[in-house]
Length: 265
Image (cartoon, rainbow, N blue to C red; front, top):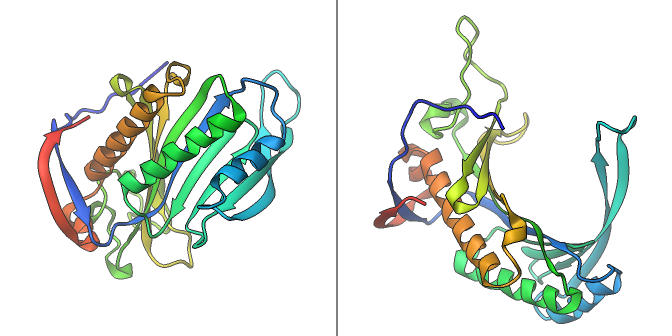
């Protein structure tokens, strides 16, 4: 594996902050499982019976997945069937497909403790009906939308992670995107940081999309180690978010409270 090194150091201390107007538009956790028995479509029905009280609205859709393999002459296309269970407000949903489980929460986000409680409950109920033998993939993702004044959309005023325009080229951008993959070996994962502009025609804003993916999901198991990894993933994403924004961006979010400084994870 080839990696690039940047010439700067990372601060050892970070500050936990609470905002009255957080930029988060969606939080989600996706878990893929090693099946313990042959998958069949009675599993989503059994799971729905377990979560129906909190997620009463049921929908089904199909998603096209495209895979490219060097050993095959053509792109492989397959349709994945997926069932989705929404809460009454349609701000949260459980998605179930073959050996995969996703919990999404849109605005208004209830906070990490509530989201974590929902996630742990859904995982336990899925285990009870699907009997998986292990975890084959896990990722926690937070998508943020940072609104900025149209006439003051200067990247470095709001974000620390920004693209560099080569010399002798116009510095004005009508669109931009940046992707960084940052390993956190001790924490057992990799952060993918994706930043960019909203499409033309939409209100001016910057997108900050943070995903922490497990490096060795097969080592997580199905009990406490999995939940502990998810807890740690949240801390990593929170640290990455704070490291990626400026004080001017924080002023938009209306900071309410700063916690004591804690060691960076």
